[in-house]
Length: 177
Ligand SMILES: NC(=O)c1ccc[n+]([C@@H]2O[C@H](COP(=O)([O-])OP(=O)(O)OC[C@H]3O[C@@H](n4cnc5c(N)ncnc54)[C@H](OP(=O)(O)O)[C@@H]3O)[C@@H](O)[C@H]2O)c1
Image 1 (cartoon, protein in one colour):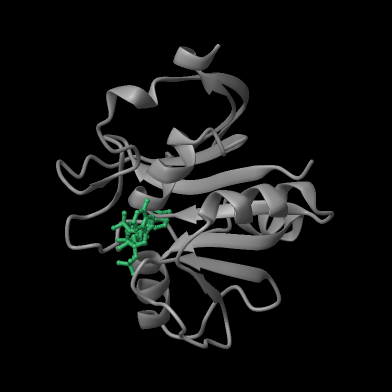
Image 2 (cartoon, rainbow, N blue to C red):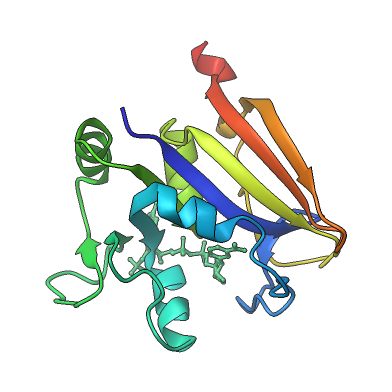
């Protein structure tokens, strides 16, 4: 079965963006394993806020990958880059997982990650922890007592820049084991 992998960057205090949505603090001095990861996936899934932000940065970056944007509001919109999905998210995810292909990248953001976590849909987390405390922002994991999930560490990479990359397998939520 194809894996769903959350490859994402956070601050040390667990934020994926400033409260304004800005990600100006992300390191861009080197690749940090992105190209290798990108080659392993052929499908990307993201929330509409993340997609709209990507478009604001300029050229759409995931050309050549099958792409789905979760949105309740963007119904019947035709878009050259992505397919908007407004309902039946679970059946889409299950169909994708069972079809043949490379792995699936869950890009983010927080609201979409929450949906995947609560439904046990994330197989692996690759987290690039940046050496910065933002103090406030959009959290990687939104507060939800039902989200308690055990992780198994698979690998750790450290970079001279201070970035720490941790690779985890996700186990089932404790409540379900
Ligand atoms: N640090 C990183 O590596 C990284 C990676 C990705 C994203 N980000 C950041 O994440 C931020 C966006 O995160 P976010 O949490 O605000 O938004 P998001 O998850 O990207 O998108 C949220 C939108 O997607 C739809 N959606 C997704 N899941 C939903 C659910 N369970 N229920 C209802 N609607 C759902 C809705 O679209 P509609 O409103 O259209 O219905 C919702 O408004 C951005 O600032 C981005 O920079 C950071």
